[in-house]
Image (cartoon, rainbow over all chains, first blue to last red; front, side):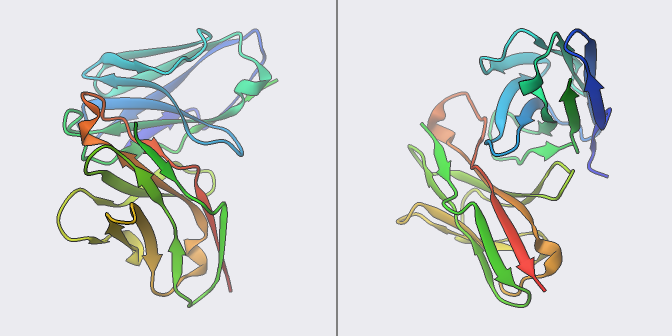
Length: 115
Length: 116
């Protein structure tokens, strides 16, 4: 049990579908992150929220839309995705955003397949 | 700018032998350094970190890492490898002087394979 829960674990969607990924952290952290992990590629940072405010948007296509309603929940809304968006999507959280010396705590990810 | 390099895509070691997974970094000032492990179909899991103080850092599952400022390295080590240590290992760095942005930069990962 990691303290960061992601649902669903697996998702298959067509290119015209709309779906959402959910992340919940039970650690009392004040920052949350979305990462994309594709085979043979480095981890790609997508979005960062600190105290529910987006502080980083790493040139992510608009077909990915994040939402952070409170410090414990983070969503990634997906629409009109492409097959190259198939990947493992990882959520993470951390404490003490302003000092930067705390590790990230990751969920187990959502394996997304776009058909 | 901050960057981190893991020069080996894969490391192979026999069970019971010592293992080393290499990491080098580049930052403006004194770095914050982290190691994570990822098992199949799981997220990354924190192993250990160096912030300041003793250059030898001990972490989970018997792993340790040595901070070497002159060589800008932070290699992960374990005296005796187990088959269950087989996983993907990531090094990460944060630059405290980057000013307001404390997002870590991750290496590309090193696949560790421990043979029985």
